[in-house]
Length: 66
Image (cartoon, rainbow, N blue to C red; front, side):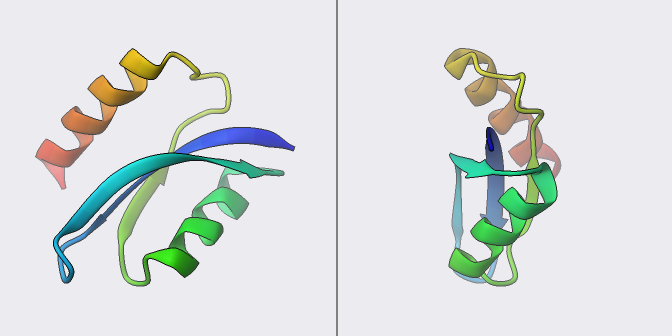
């Protein structure tokens, strides 16, 4: 198991955020978040991205494009 940062954005509920998810791969991590935020657009980062500041910067850049 690894920790994957997963970004999500749900336009229907005006909700967005990111959280680390323990999973065996990135697909499983996204499925876990999808259950919590049905219909949300999401993306996961590599488990090697661990710097919190870098994750926040990437999240903001991703939100600008969603």
